[in-house]
Length: 117
Image (tube, rainbow, N blue to C red):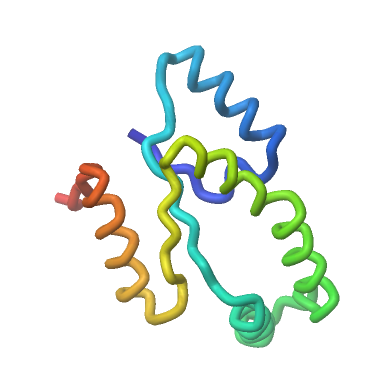
């Protein structure tokens, strides 16, 4: 198996991925959507900008990226939702908390996680 992070980002990429996977007689098993309120996303990205000294993470740039996500990326959840493979996970909380929510959703689908040896 494999994990895709941040791809596909728009409907055209969904079609490309479908074509690629179809050619291999494969399909996606699950789509994890981390649900985070917009104000929380803004706060996190603003904090990251300060902590990492990212001059490109201005308030305007962050707003633009969130708008692009809402316009181009969020609609793919509808496509995958009709296939019954979307799990919306509460993305607010500590890393361990959110990770456990993701693993629980994958476990519920029978997608077992492998531990490092």
